[in-house]
Length: 324
Image (cartoon, rainbow, N blue to C red; front, top):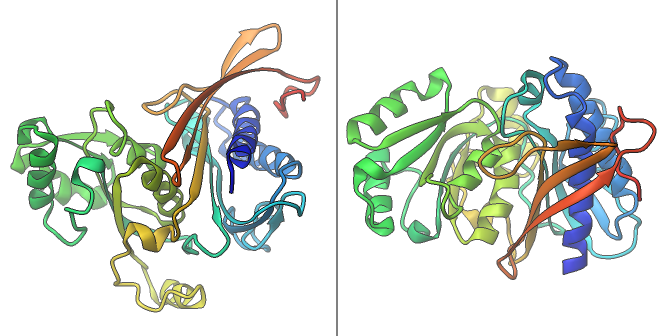
């Protein structure tokens, strides 16, 4: 993979963000997701790569576009695995909330974990504590380690966690330890990345969320030099069998960062749909001029690029596709 591919991938996330932003605050999450998926799929046709979707919108019978196993790109260029979330935060967009993004992770063929669509336990920390924390450790121990390595008092350590009943006991333990808790409603990719980014004020991400989002997150954490561990959390025998069909025999195994994204190279790209901690959302500036805010990271070089772009909407604003 090369720098040119990284920049081409950003064009794809921009297209998805522009399309879904037209549905912001309209209460129509499926329409927003469809718009993002259609725009992303169309833009992929122009990217020079031989891509295969390993994490997408579902199986072929569930998703007519961006389904698992779908081939993307021009058929020329590098052979890559692709993990996509055309709109992370469909409910966010429907309600007009912050932190919705269009997201893609790309890595060399055969290096992205084929994670089934189920729950996954996750732990993310920044570079300072990389290699020192364990998913199986009590959260109190993890907080102590992160406090020491970031040179913070425990009372100043901030843990971000999704506001769900399943996390109530964990939240209480974090508070009893004396650390801070900040909640997010939806969109755990942005929240996870915040724990590994400098100057976000977030030190630890912990909790149970979507497994596909976990693999996408891992590509970014690898580029940031942080650490991530995860463990699949199937809810029933059917989900256990699905894991086995995808090559995951032992669902109790703690997955390290290199299990989620093997190899030394991966690209993560995201464009904001609504503003949040990581990116600003799509902004309509008038006269068909629209601004997007994106980030692209490459694990091999550790390069992080922030890209602001202006687009002129075409004559079909519901598609929100930029003119070439």
